[in-house]
Image (tube, rainbow, N blue to C red; front, side, top):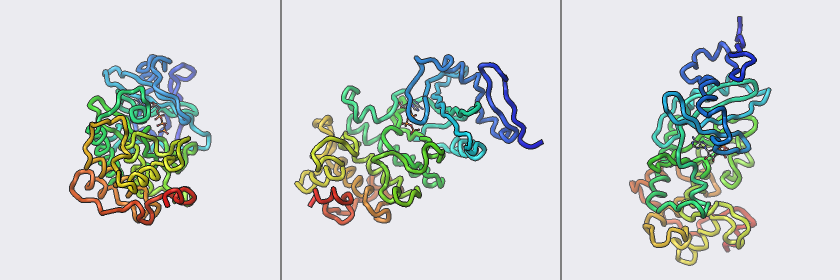
Length: 329
Ligand SMILES: Nc1ncnc2c1ncn2[C@@H]1O[C@H](COP(=O)(O)OP(=O)(O)OP(=O)(O)O)[C@@H](O)[C@H]1O
């Protein structure tokens, strides 16, 4: 018989594709009808955002559970069997700082991913949008520790995230940071190995091979963004401020590392913690992957279980490759 293709509700607005090999995945399978109803027919008013990779809607299931549904176009040559087994595998991961992937649905040329709904959206908005209420230092520190422990958990489960960035950190109702699974984690055709601009470890551009240390690099960029309240790479600006590595090293050389912090924090911060986050950020974005700490070490530093090594700003490797490192000389 082979993998018979079944088209449910053929020719109706609820039409979807199911194949025999998906039988084992039925607990993770959502019907299109249920998702259609949950999102009020994918109504404009329920739209959370449209990104290059797809469109996300908020929804409410008949069980009253709040969900987010990501609609993604599938390439014809995509290995759907492999993709679905990855989704199911990722859906089995459990950590309080991960956005739970609840399941999926499949239509002709389209995949729908179902996640827990995060009411406060993503961190990108909170850190870089002046119009959003600012996050206090203690909220930021709590969020970053949560994200670090989620990334450590992924590495322990032999998963790579591949796209750690502020836009992939969502906030739940208690303002816990939850790491979202971007499409990069599935290694889909339209978002291949490389993560997002600015967060990509330098070696990844050459090798194209994602590693735990490349995840650590992206996490380091995120740490610097948390403390400085600015994007890792920002343009235009003074050359020495163009990249947060240069900016933080400049402040450190002037003997005022904490001066690199987000001005919006005003007096609300703990000097020792900001200093540690900035130094740890620099340690994670080192040029040589082997010099970067593992996520287990990162978590130990953040939890105060380990003390960071002394690291003057002119330590080899703590800067960006030419030509920008000349700015730091
Ligand atoms: N589970 C969720 N709960 C609430 N909002 C969400 C959820 N997932 C995504 N969003 C919001 O939907 C919008 C689009 O999200 P999406 O994940 O597609 O963006 P992205 O992170 O740029 O894409 P990708 O990670 O696939 O590269 C964003 O504003 C995001 O905050």
